[in-house]
Amino acid sequence: MTKYCTTLFLFCWIPSVFIFCQPAIHTPAPQLSAPAYPAATVPESNIDIPVQIDLAPFFALANKQVDTLFTSPHFPDDWVQEGCGIRYKYSFRRGPLQFTIKNTTIDIAFTGYYKIIGSTRACVNGKALSPWTPACQCGFEEGERKVKVGLTVHLFLMTNYSIKMQVVRKEPEPLDRCTVCFWGQDITTSILDALKKELDQSKAGLEKGYGRIDLKPRFQQLWNIMNTPYNINNMGWLQLNPQRIRINNVTAANDQLQIGVGLAARPIIRFEKPEPLITPVPHIGNFSRDKGFRIYADLVMNYDSLSRLLTEQIKGKEFVFSKAFIKKRFVFQECRLVGSADNRLVIQVRFTGTNNGSFFVTGKPLYYADSRTFRITDVDFELQSKNALLKTADWLFSRKITSTIETMAQYDLTSILNTAKTNISQQLNRSFIKGVSGNGSIQDITVAGIFPQSNWLAVRAYCSGDFLLKVAGMDFKL
Image (cartoon, rainbow, N blue to C red; front, top):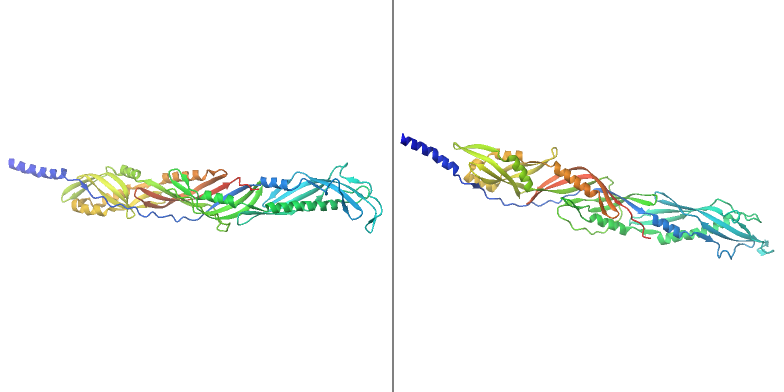
């Protein structure tokens, strides 16, 4: 009986020692390698830029260039003589300039006030037969005679960003006639002819001095701003990367000339700050007028936070396997994302149970747009781990383990996409420099690709929306 008990004790004790003294299993860490991070093939976007140009300096120029007082030569001492029998002298002053703007045409109108003194004598064949009569006047006692005068300025925006001005003088329109008292002759036409000559000189002065206004330095400044990278909180650097410029329309209202500028750009957000691009602003051209913009934004997901979420889901999951009539127990303790190899995520699995230890699996990251989730699929044992386990613990090769990791390794990206949408919107709706501000909205944001890197997971987001870059205070350099 004693011998039987001893035998039974040894039979029970030896397997127990075998079970509880199993060595820890740790497979070698794989060689991690960051795959080439693909550059985004950024689609061309169209950005609308309403540019406002203050016309007040031009109005001031017109006030300065168009004289306030016109007189006959050497008034009031000398006379203007027409033929042998008529002489006169006049004074003409203008009232305030009034500006009316429609599209690219500026009408400048004012009321002129004039007065005249004249006399006559008898002549035959160009020879005077009598002395000059006493001077008679018009526009003095009865008040100055009035005439409506105006100029029309046509503005043309050239492809080299210069504004060409074409000035057209309108025909003066007399509101009051002027008839010299004692000989009853209407000399209004003579006065208006003299006025036209004065206005033509002012028109020529405007076109010669300011017929072309160069806005290229201002557009170059704007072009440089758009090539400058701007930091977006917790996301990276936004760079608009302008490509070409078009002019949609040119209109004017009140004191503002409004130029609808269309910009072709390839905006992108990068992890690292890119160098500012210094390129000359291209000439104005024509291209697609599709509205809105499209932008790629690369977001960073930290492996530590992804590992923590996966561990919370999987820790404590237990399986029992049978190997040669011996029960093998496996309990998940931790799953830690450690990097990438061969364009696949590498996950270290720590476990307890019959054995303690760790091994490595790899999986393919995929995005599911319908649920906005990122999942690790096609999970399998990493090659070095597989080779090591075949020699020490082949019982671990179970689809239950890899399937559980696939089931649990799902991440809802709704929050990170919404945060990215908010951050990008904040950066679009702000002042870049004095006089240059943005106004935009993100209509849609989705995931265009997921790229595992050495120390983080790159999620490339694709955004579409509308964006206005408003430029105000771009005045003329007169």
